[in-house]
Length: 256
Image 1 (cartoon, rainbow, N blue to C red):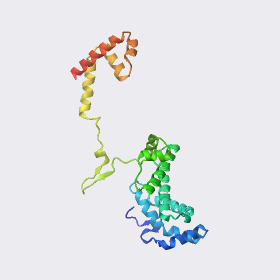
Image 2: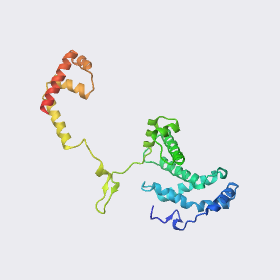
Image 3: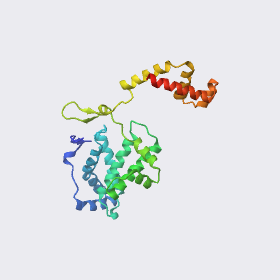
């Protein structure tokens, strides 16, 4: 994206910029229905679209597609801008362009998320952008939930649902040699040699128990049964289950 010059047939190195003293005049003419002024506004703000799509670099999306979607957001901003509110056009247009791109990414995500969850996430992103403009900082989850009149956990779930997946082979660092990928930084604390040895030792220790003790351990710790349920199953008292269980665990600990 950073090196591509021609996007959708447009030479981005030659994009024109409308002088600030002409913007309001053209916006008022476009609002009044002047199609030539509208066309000039679109062509004169393509650099704004280009700067916005830089934020979405690295997502694997086509630059041409993002640029086209961003242009739709720009056109919507031009058509809906109110010249009487004393707001800079870029202040209004940038969130419109970002919103259009995010909507596109949301609807074309490789992970399917429910419509209600996506709508909640979209509202949260809009509320976040509004808060940043007003307070010049990012809101906390508590502030965001309050602005949306929602539970904090619902906001967190919605925002997490639309996060783009990252490839395990995504490079995160390179010093000129072999790059370090996400996979290299993901630790597996379960499938280690130590864990396997513990599992083998546990299985061997359980095999050394009597059949009744094995059954009690199986029902209590692998099936989640209560002592009362085990007692009813094997027709002994709860006190006996408790005593046998305690003895079995003690022998397992000693053997491991």
